[in-house]
Image (tube, rainbow, N blue to C red):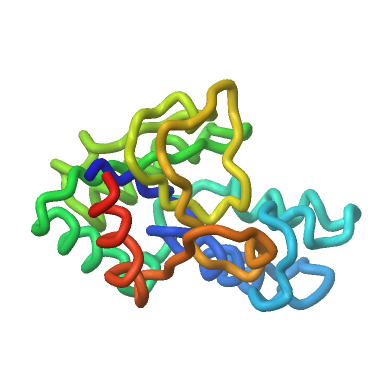
Length: 184
């Protein structure tokens, strides 16, 4: 099975990185919003518009994407999927403010999954044009120019719980992905 994994919010812990960045700044106007209170996929949309520059300044800062911690269990699960014979790729979208983001996504993969895994990266603004059997993504609705051939498996986060469909975390992937592999 060809498994496409989103990077941020699935493999890399964007939320923890954002909270750490927020708490490290001395000029934040309020406490960071707890993950359980998040309602929007885009973190900037969960904060008042007057805080938008501060919010965006955190995730566009040099080092933000490179230094994100791995999601608990993600690295081990990727290794297990590969050992089971699956073709695992990272399918990630860069920010519109891509200056540091793109390079740092590659650096993150090299650091946590190894140099060889860098060749398994697909960086695109439109994931619907990428072929695969499954896309594991925390984005509630992945849209683009085509009808995707992959099945969207939602990586569970508080801001996507209103969406129905196959859902997983790294603690539950072994109950979800094997069922899909049998269908492929």
